[in-house]
Amino acid sequence: MKKALVFGFAISLMVSCSKSESSSIPDHSNVTVTSTPEPVVKKDSIEDLTKNIEEGKALVEGADCMTCHQTGEKLIGPSYLDIAGKYENTPENTEMLAGKIINGGSGVWGSVPMSAHPAMSPENAKKMVAYIMSLKK
Image (cartoon, rainbow, N blue to C red):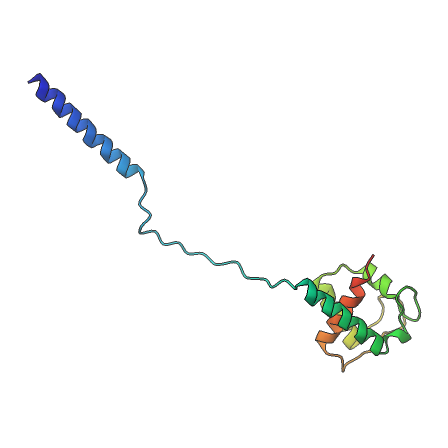
């Protein structure tokens, strides 16, 4: 009788231990995980940036910009170094400065208005801005 009692106790101990182990491990087989992937932001390569700067320099030199602007000294308008120093190189400032090239503007650097260049494409104006911003010291 004593052996039967010990045997019964051992069996109930094994059964209770096995149940607690299996219930403490969560079953993830039926779990559905949904998430929104982070958007992929294309970073310009060094080659692309260099190409834009070189093309921007050629556009500046080929347009009438040098009539009013120089790299290091103020003429009628501010120097390119002054422009690069005034603005942080951000997409928002690139858009704004490209808009000034295309639409003209006044009041930021004095009372003399900058002439508009409506035939200039936004892409080319941004390349010009990339060149000017590359001069920042």
